Length: 465
Figure 1 (cartoon, rainbow, N blue to C red):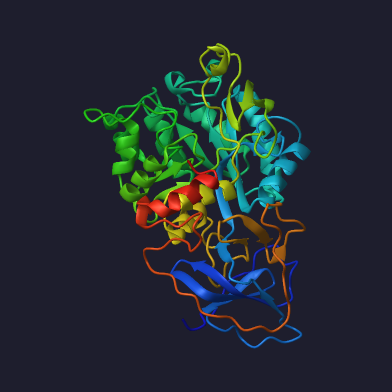
Figure 2: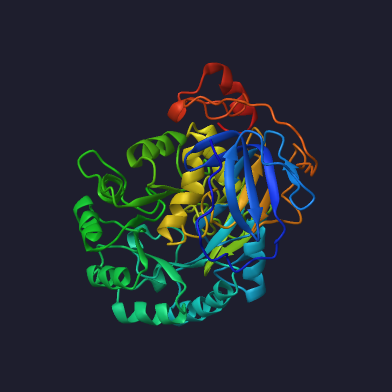
């Protein structure tokens, strides 16, 4: 593949890394496919060029970083996340929110949309204003209101006491508090006033998502006709799909204009469901999210999600006080978000059998497009911000680059840290077929998950069961 020149554009606001540099020798995942080996030329925090084979000649002004065959994916774009690292966007201070964002950046999420859960309207206004300030500072890419216009029948881990019927005036108050940074709002379309609110939000340039809904297929499809274009964590918080009543999940999956979030953490959805959604949605409609809450990356114990108490056991977050633990004969509470990070989600999606380029699109390119940020982030192509992640053969994170700068410390893994070289090297060519997702036995899978029998023991050893 020849060098692709950068298109003329204004560089992103973060130009801290002005020295030209080359990253070479990796398996570079681009919108056009996997370059193996591939190279990326960067300057001023922007991708200048991308190509395959030997990189341009290095120089003292343009050193080469040898990625030694690692996978190179675009920085992750998580458009649905409530917190992580012990802190949250839904409660606490501005510094807590900054720490949550920093935690997820360390796990490869270089673009973060902070999600708020249902709360009293005045409280949502206050938190939206605080988070809008962080968005203005570049810490966040915007806000997602997951509530309060939801269905109590499908409230999940959200507080039904504060759910209200969709109301355009209330929406305008929340939008004003968000100071231009509200990007997504989730609505239950069966509630009175929903159609008017969907239209108002769409006209304001806010992505309308259908979620936490008990809507029938017909009502959900009518919401799409009114301007809804996105599905909040498909299947979760929705009427179950039935062969005579496909519900919101079936209707949303059936509409080509709708992008569909899935939480591929091994808890919210079965891997078969992930593969079926990926098949049905096709390239460009699948969006991987974490729906992470404060407990992401933290030990088991007690946490909060908005006003709700959450207990985490075995890495699974559920509402506390819901009849005792399953191990004591009580019924387990509803799942309360996830404890996953985007690198976990990506690794699980690959192990489930999704091809690497489609996983990269679902974790980066498609959510960037949904958010209206695809002219800045979401892909490894010239003219976009130099946000990327480096992974080993098992898709364990090795390093993260944001705005052309390596973060100070990538998350530790049992496979060790990536060693970066800055001297001229040569690179062997390794081919990937269109049916092979990865080369290592721990993740080897053919198109959409018909995993070879010899790979299953390795998958099980890696924790994918």
